[in-house]
Amino acid sequence: MTAIELTPVVELAGITKAYPGVVANDSVNLSLYGGEVHVVLGENGAGKSTLIGVLSGMITPDSGEILIDGDPVEIRSPKDALDLGIGTVYQHSLLVPTLSVIDNMMLGTAKLFSLDRDQARRRLDELASILGVQIDPEATVGNLALGERQQVEIVKALWRGERALILDEPTSMLTPQGVQALSEVVRRLVGNGLSVVFITHKLNEALDLGDRITVLRRGRNAGELTPDKIARTERGDLKDLVVALIFGAVDPATLTNQGEGGSLGQQPVCFRLEEVLLHGDKPWPILDSVSLEIRRGEIFGIAGIDGNGQKELAEVIAGQRKPDSGEIFLDEESVTDLSVAARQKRGIRYVTDDRHGEGTVSELSISLNTVLKRVGQRPFWRRARVRHSLIREFATTLVAEHDVRAPHTEVSIANLSGGNVQKIVVGRELAMEPRVVVYNKPTYGLDVKTIKAVLARIVSQANQGTVAFLISTELDELITTCDRIGVMYQGRITGILDSQLGIETRLGELMTGGVNRHD
Image (tube, rainbow, N blue to C red; front, side):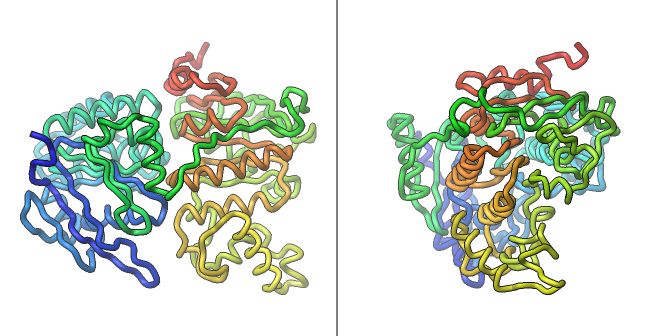
């Protein structure tokens, strides 16, 4: 008996949800079958988040029907969803930051209150081991890095036995080994009859895991690939078909960085770090004797599981943190003691991983956000007066050059999708004649089309001679975009590899401590 002959365990029928100026879901249908991984794909703004919100009880639809085992139900809250056996791991953490990991595990799961903490710790260790990660059960969640929090969310979801489990970008912070471990867990879960909804922007991941694939475009169903369709279609053809459903066109071009003026080996070293040391509250330094030499026009990738010093390295380069020792040089000038503003004047720019918090001010317009780091500076300010016309002109040009989808530049930036916000953040930094740009996970949470646009800008800027530090947890992204890749583990650079196909396994080994840091 095939899945299509069975009654869906959960079914969304004709779901519509509108907001002022936009219809997020327009008569969307989604059927979840037990024993299947159902992948949902689509651009930013395609309606995925709204659909997940409806299914998880976070959003009440304007119209449409939800059925459980063929019977209509109402889901008006997350509690309703959980009571019906629908659990969700959100892309953005909903853990209580002031509580410990183990307390978050047990919170809201009544049947676990009968467990003592030792039993709960053993269960946590068991699930963490399955995922291939280390989680301190007594760590305060608010002190964890983004990737560490996501790992806790995944473990918490696996702790529950649900009718349907929604995983929203669950692998974005995992190593290849961790992804493989999670894939095996998901397969065991669907083998026991669970329905797993898998939200991802990674096409290969979708094809590897998906038994059924639904594509949304502009709030509507663009198409569904059934298990039979997937099974009888060649991999390459399947990939082209999915991309065509998402965007309406196929563009198989691969990004490469050629550097300015030919071989990078002929370019001078223009940026270097010497024995940079930064202490923290861990048993080892946050940054432990980090030394690097980067040539003009080079894209240097930084790989590693989140929480191993990548963000701190970015902040040290940008001037937001001062190292305890070591030196940072730009064209043989020490910038170690310079402020953030002084480094910006010398061309050191930083694209933060927190686009909605640190990177922008949601209450301000797009125009003002494009000059957020130039407040009070000419030509946009003159004698303490704001020159609004120049700011609007600048913003209009930036929006056009970076293909930002916005009705006009005076709308609040909070009205834009995450991908369009990221285009603004990247464009703002590149408009300031940078010599060195640090990109901290610039494509996190973006759709494949926006990812390609952002990476194309990075490559284009490098081809003009700009140094790029690209911090990412996406190995495919690093391998296809960077010239070299350094791996960070427990605050150290454990290896530097030339980018080429076939190095994924070695990168994964280095990311998980394949080199003894005390050697």
